Length: 517
Ligand SMILES: [Zn+2]
Ligand SMILES: [Zn+2]
Image 1 (cartoon, rainbow, N blue to C red):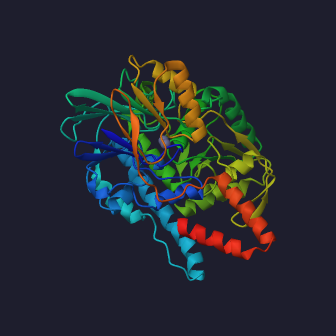
Image 2 (cartoon, rainbow, N blue to C red; image 1 turned 30 degrees about the vertical axis):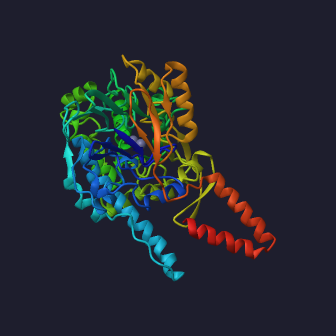
Image 3 (cartoon, helix red, strand yellow; image 1 turned 60 degrees about the horizontal axis):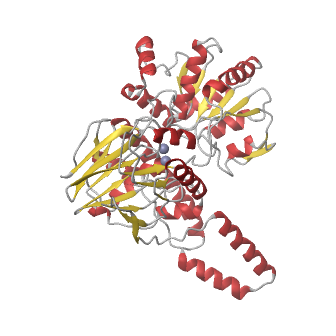
């Protein structure tokens, strides 16, 4: 068995592993690269394999950094089953066309500039239509039910406790009359999340591919810690006639926030104030959550029985799918408005911020990670003036940042999860984390368990053997990864050159950059 690390290697996004077993080839995940320009370039290049030769795909969960290049894979010749859980399929049905639409918009914007410059136009990685036409390839597999896509191999999906439908993939296979098991954690969730089950405890595996998003960080806060604080914010804001604006990711965080509101209402910490979910994607996702009760933990299932419906479908909840309904919320006072995107960079949330940031009686509550440069980040960094849709807005509303709401296990939680393995793996691979985070986590595991660990580079090919695993080859990734530091260096150099008016050097650098891009 060989594994090629085609993504999420020393970086978080673009999860994709190519596995070669006898004459078969298959993928675990086929995700989009997200982040800075250089990382996103990987989405445009050719795959380091021929999509038409892939026999099947196993998809761990619906997040775009795991599923987002599936439509591209199909566009380039893949036409075989994609095995995953029913909830993941339902979420992919809305998330992938949405991602296609975003690609189309991005290219349209770039093409306007290219047209003006008289340059060759770009094509989107895939369109919303591409993402719709591949949906029939999804093949549902329930948790804990083994299936055998090829002879000599059995695969079982286990609940990863990360988001609705998320799975770890256990791949059991035979080689030279020996049995082996590789486990891919996908994204590893946490115990006691609001709605879903805890991550499945694995008793043994020979090879383990584990994520490391929080490989060097610990979570603080969490709902139980923040609940009284959150309730007070809501009560105070609404008492003074303001709105509580909550930027939230459409999948998962929106439903978590609704569930928190449900609990606070039940415990009489807050009254049944009007709650609006104003994002077409979040509305669809909430409906999928409400019909995927089989994925919930026991406590949430019991609540569904008591309420006769999913508890987060509050009696005081209104969905506003159309833009007219959304616009009507501009006049509203004393309400809780949940909208996407979670980092306040796109989507309808921007309208609500535009309408509320200047009001000292309103509040904005963030619940998730805010990337450098995002509007959400600037607000939690207490910037006093922001520009939204071309208008300068003075920030007078109260801005809050709730900590500890990640769907990823932190390093202590991952080590704890590993401690339940009765037999530790022969070899581990640490992926899906920034380099610093992945290396730090590898050190922590080595210190505690003394297991051989590889932190693979993008394109590394390894052969799995019980007597030692090593990198046997390296697939070429055409794009050069320029990190932020290198980019800053290039900028400084260019500024110095232009200051010296050394145009020859500038032209040489331009030609060099042209060649590598
Ligand atoms: Zn994820
Ligand atoms: Zn991920």
